[in-house]
Image 1 (cartoon, rainbow, N blue to C red):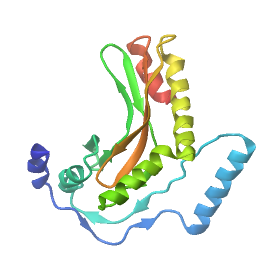
Image 2 (image 1 turned 90 degrees about the vertical axis):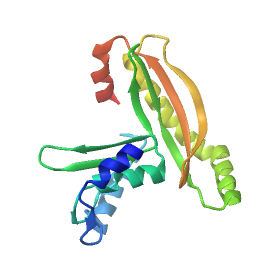
Image 3 (image 1 turned 90 degrees about the horizontal axis):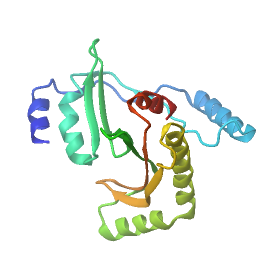
Length: 199
């Protein structure tokens, strides 16, 4: 973080020029929501993460706020990227999507279900326990876990898919998450890109 703070201090400060606004109108969002419901009812899918971008005009660089964002959230998976046209991408995530080591061992740690973590430690502990024991939240976490077990199993060595962590509580500055983990061993380096595309 100290190195990041030094680098980001040299970036042009980020300045918001107007409010963030949704890309979709309320009617467009309602239409998208209705389409998701139709897909679910038809059995074409069983979970959809319906999101939309919010936009605002800014000046300066996202890099100027990176260190403070990373310091505040303490999320373990973060990065900054500047593309050729000057576009920037700033990421700060607590979720490990895929990690692959030199021995072809792949890991994923899906997060499903979240609770706020208020400043009051008693309230924070109560919400953490509620999340940890919620039947609904565990069911959703398990559904995603099974999906990722299937994705990894398509390209993994037979018998190598394991679940070393199930329904673990991870707490960050602002939230509690319910996290599980799937591991597998890929058949070789050539399986890495197909795994990324399949997942």
